[in-house]
Structures are given as C-alpha cells and as structure tokens.
Amino acid sequence: MFKEGIRSPDGRLTAVEGGLKLPILPQQLARFSGLSGRQVVLGVRPEHLLVRPPDGVAAVPLLLSVKVVEPLGYDMDVYMSSNLNEHIVARLEASAAIGAGFQPDARVTAYVDPRKVHFFEPGDAGMNLSQTSEIAHAVA
Image (cartoon, rainbow, N blue to C red):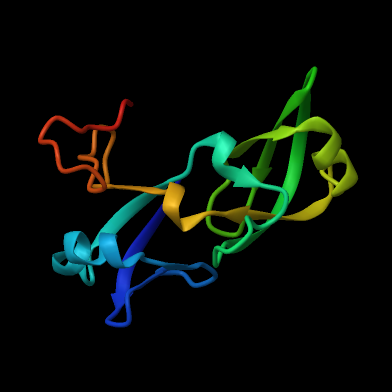
C-alpha cells in the first residue's frame, strides 16, 4: 500500500513524495472531492498488479525492485519494493512474469489498472473510501 495525498484539482492522485500519479476515474472523482490535501492509503490486490498494461486503459506504470520470487505452479508471488513502499506483492502468471524479467534483483515495470484500486483512510483499520457502505474497514 502507498500513503498518498490527493493533491491536484485535475483528478489525479499524486504521491506526496513524488513518483506516482494515478488518474482517478470520473465515477470515483465525486467520492474523493473532499479529500484534497489529505493522506489516503492506496490499496492494490496482488492479482491486480500486471506484467503488461491492460488494453484500452491508461494503466499506471510502477518501477519496482524484485526481492523474492515464490513459484506456485501456474502463478508466482513476487515480493518487490518501490521508492514509496518496501512491501509490494504481485501474484503473476509465471510464464508471463519470467518472460518480462521478474526475477530476484531485477528492476521491472508492473502496471496498475486504476479501475482495480481501493483507497483507505490511514491507520491499521482505515475506512475503505472506495466503498459506499459504512461497514468497509481494512483488515489489519
């Protein structure tokens, strides 16, 4: 997860420390309009980090350092870090990931589909800001 702040009025989530800009989709913009200048936590499920950008979507590239690769048969879990976060996990199709260079000590690019992200309030049990339900807390 990344601790980020919604900074710009053009509907882009911008990292406080720089390096990540994520477009907020039109259907998300109204929900986050009151969060300008506040810290939020960006959550991406391991299976939603991608080796290649999805077709027809302005995916966000992340430059990552691979630490550990755990083969799981058809899939593999890849443990990585970025300049914003030391603990990033991706669950990737093994053959695609190996073909894209996902191996220990490699610098790779993974892609985030903005339709698949979640936003949370900071803290161990932060409210899921991506949900409209009042019962939407992150599990610590």
